[in-house]
Image (cartoon, rainbow, N blue to C red; front, side, top):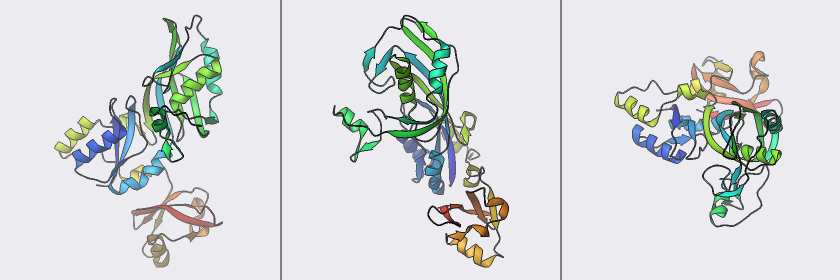
Length: 303
């Protein structure tokens, strides 16, 4: 079985738990997820199956959409509700929604984050959360990310000295949404915590495309595999280049994963890379510009 399972991860499970359960349900070993979601986060978690695991890095690089809640008035060690409170401040007068929106705008585009201590980034061969659990403070490297949008989706409310509001984030690979919440508080001069988070979409999948683990189990019991997204469908956002077996030399070169001259591509595709390459209508590779050889293209993935 090769392709993608668009899974809706429920709260209370790790991404690894999901992979383990999918392996058992489908009775297969070659299963991988496309980007960790914390246990207290639910949402879209594409699971790669069989040769679809070759798409893991590609899908991890795609844009993600998150929705959730931010609360002003306290900060935690983990920047979400998993950690211990390290700072509290009663919010007596609500910060205006306009001021919040202006501050959120400053945290979009190309920005630099300092990842939280409770994160999987490695420093000197050891993950930050391992240092944190041992109570060891280490210097955290700056982490460049791209945030397409960071916006309020509800008016804020003030209750019991804490201010809450709903938000939406559209961002690229490696963005720590809880750090966005924390940094928003720093910008506004108040402690802040991400108090809820859902991954609403992971390109090209949204919630409507997804199955829960229970739904997957029921489908498999009914011998229904209509949920499986093929490798071809997963790469449908890329232009296609079809090469026939009548083009003997080119066909063989592509089949072997050779580096090619850019000008072998049809002219209309030369400025649309990357492209998916089909040999006799069967997907074979994803070709892109060669990173170090001008005028050359090379396969980044072979299928």
